[in-house]
Each structure stands twice: as structure tokens, then as C-alpha cells.
Length: 186
Length: 234
Image (cartoon, each protein chain N blue to C red):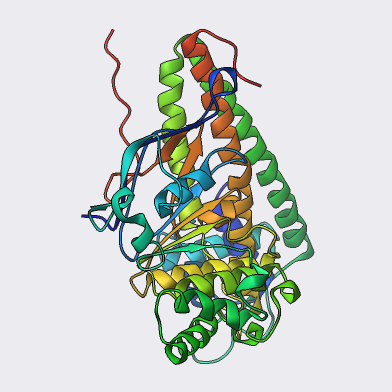
């Protein structure tokens, strides 16, 4: 399963059993600015896919009534697959960082070009660091999960920057030294 | 016109082989009601930049203006009136308990004792440090010491607050509360300029880095954050 939206929907079902429309609303709140949902109808398509793959199951008795709202819960397979997916994402992050460094190194003979890229990368990091929300102690008193998510997102973003900013400084020094035709200061 | 303008500031320490360029042609503007944070490693010059912005240290070259006026010409009267430089040290001869430390600075500037006491209480409450008023500075923990230091600075009702390392030595939960406090001060029209060695200190601020004496990032609020890559001529 490649769709990030489908994995995110599976995560929401793991967090709390829900029906289609409710999931669409929770998705907009939980993943605002991170993932885009093309429309509510996509949620039903995704739920169908997740169910066919055995990752979620309909809760018996929730389809009855005048306006049936079948609710879904995650299966054991669904939870296991979700955990596996999270781990894979971490590895993907590492791979991307290595790839970026390797691709930047192609400018070893044109350090001025690398410095332009580093400058842009540095500014992007600063913008990200600026936008990292400062979590308030209890943003949603009735929903401890959302408060926890806000704190985890904020801290992850800020600590990632704790590594990136010194890296930008290091890379800038290396390429400046190349541009000046000298060894980088260690 | 920006509230604070640092224009082509350079500063070096030492001479000859020991020469260390701390700031090289650094320019920065801070607007009223804006929070700006400078990230840098130890000995990067971030504290020097703040001291120069406060007027307590003079640059080798360049100009610092506050409200359009050259700080070097009148820094003594400006410091304390328009600029609040947040010191985290408490000298014993300035008072026994925290409240004394907030009052004494105001008395030195001619504020009447009753007014100074009222302002001290208001500032402590504003910084969520009212419970520290009767404590000795040595009894404060890391987060409380920062809050009290901020309260002491804002009791002087500055337009610009300068805080060197507001979150160093502060535990995680207290750290976020301090950042929220600083940010909330900008909502009252105060400009806040901080330095930090932790990227967490950049949250909610216009962020710049200081590296090898050079400032990187947006030197003014208006400047576009990302410049397009230039096409190099062959």
C-alpha cells in the first residue's frame, strides 16, 4: 500500500474506531498541513481498500438504523502493518538525508553552486524552526491524544533542526574552504 | 523605519594571530511587536550581537539605531528606558529578595518607590513569577530565574527586550512556557531579540543563524525568505 493518506486513515482508525464522515473530519484536523484529502468520498474508497486487505474490520451492528453509519476498527494485522510502516518511514528519512548530502557533493568542483543550495536549505530550515509550534500545556483538555500529538510533532521538528542547523554550518564551511582553495577548518 | 536597526556591524577581539572576527558586516532590523531569535554555536558571537544591540558594547564599525537614533550617541539614557537587557545574574547589593531587585532598578531611574513596587508586582505577575517575589535569588530554580530576570527587564517598560539564552539550563516544560511568555510580550507591542544555542529557542520567532561572524536568514521582516537560485553565467 503506497498511499500516505490510506496509512493515515488506518492510523486514525487505530486511534479510535470511527465511521466514514467522522474519519474525514478527524483527518482534516489531525493532518492539516501535512496530508491532503481530495474529498470525503475518498475516505469511503480507502476504507474499502483497507477492509479488503484485512487491515480494518466493520464493527458488527453499526450498519443498522435509518442512517447506517458502519464503524470500523483496526485488525491485529492492521496494527502490525501500521507499526511496520512507521519504522520504514524512519529509514526513508535517513535515506533521504544521505541522498541529499551525496547529491550536494557533486558540486565539489563548483562550490559556489553548492553554497547557493546550502543557503536556500538553511533558510528553509530556519523557516521550519520558526514555524514549529510552541505546545501549550493542554491545547485540547478533552482529547489528550491531540495534545500529545502536538507536543510530539513540535519536539520532533525542533530536535531535527537541532541537528540540521549545525550541519548547514558545517557544509557551508566545507564548501567555502573549497571555494577559497584551502582545507576546511576542523 | 524599524525599531532596532543594526547596519553593517563588525566586531573583532584580539590582534594578530589571536584575532577572532566575531561579527562581519552583520545587518539586522527588528520591528516593534516582533520576535527575532539568533541561533549560533558557543563563541559564535551571538551574545556579542545582543550586547551591541543593547549599547553596552560598541562595534568596531557599523551603526546601531533605536527608533532611528544612533545608539552610540546616547546609549546611557536609552538603556533601561527603551531597551530592557535581560540579565540573569542578581547582585547581592541590589536587594535581599526578588522584589527588591525589581524595585531597585526603577528607583535608580527616578521612579517613585510606591510606583516602582506596583510595577515590580505587575511585572512578576506578567512573567508568571509572582510566587517568587519574596524568595532570595539563590532559591530560584532555572526556569524561575529566567522569569524573574524577564520580569526585572519588563518592569522598566522597555520597547525592546534583549534576552541572551532564555532557555539554557531550563527544563523542557518550563522552556516552552518561557517561549510563550516572550512571544506574548510581542503581542503587547514589545520587540524581543533573543540569542540561543538551541533550535527550540527559534520557535515562533523570525530566525537567523550566526556563523563565522555572518548572519544568515532574513535580516528584515519583509525580505522574501527564499531567494531564487541564480543562473550562473558560463
